[in-house]
Image 1 (tube, rainbow, N blue to C red):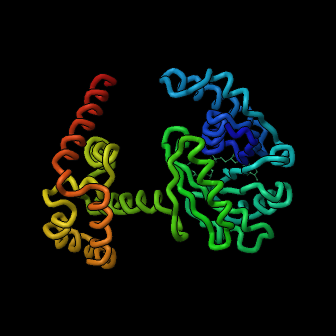
Image 2: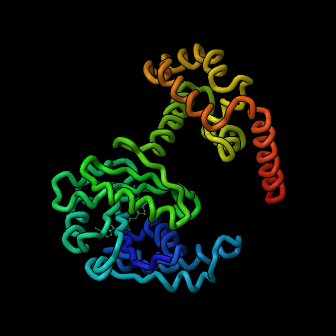
Length: 311
Ligand SMILES: NC(=O)c1ccc[n+]([C@@H]2O[C@H](COP(=O)([O-])OP(=O)(O)OC[C@H]3O[C@@H](n4cnc5c(N)ncnc54)[C@H](O)[C@@H]3O)[C@@H](O)[C@H]2O)c1
């Protein structure tokens, strides 16, 4: 097990979440914040969440052992010295992040990876002018990071490929499934997808078609319930005999009409559909389609039974 220390900068919801992820994977964690009161609260949150995770059987070690790996400091140099990885988690402000990253680049050893948890701002908008920028990239977690077991890894064009590899290996060693971005996009993938759904939801409310409570219910018990087993592409692939190509053929005109209503004209091109169809057929040959539909249904049955038992 790799026991190199990790520094986490900023002890809000994401900083405490990362501390739990890293410490649960056996890493010594130094959690830093400029506000001593926030660190006191973070201490309580980390211990409390670890106890709850243990209650659900989600930890491999006693919670006190894991909590014992996390130390707390208001001194940035103490947090960073000798660490292999720094995870910045301060508020989403480009200038503040640049200032912290500039200090980190001076304090951290040359082979230390400097990652930002930024939700929307790509690294080339933060660190383009920084000496040491090749060590910097974005690792964007879900919230809370210890429950949504994915992390988006988004390098800038100037990020050293070795830094990307190390970051991917770190996420895997912590039990997180890395999503590797091929180009930088504002909001990465997670928040762009979330944003697309929210844009339409707000538009439907503005038009008087529905309200927030009904949209939450529809996503929680409908779309999102299914998405917790299969993603949006696999959903439509399994919804139509003949798979996603048949879905596109039958439904495309309706989706194009709905997009045009919102001023969106680009994404459903034949070329893009072909690429998605190719990905899906590589993942699931059509001869296995019935078997997979049966599997999806049983997974949803298990989830439904679990929800009934919890309610
Ligand atoms: N909240 C989410 O759902 C979520 C999800 C993924 C990523 N993120 C991103 O993670 C980052 C942190 O978000 P959060 O929700 O934890 O914020 P937060 O406001 O809960 O916590 C930020 C913490 O950083 C501390 N801080 C501020 N300036 C600092 C500095 N210069 N040095 C050290 N500590 C400093 C604050 O005292 C505070 O405790 C943001 O970039 C955010 O966009 C948030």
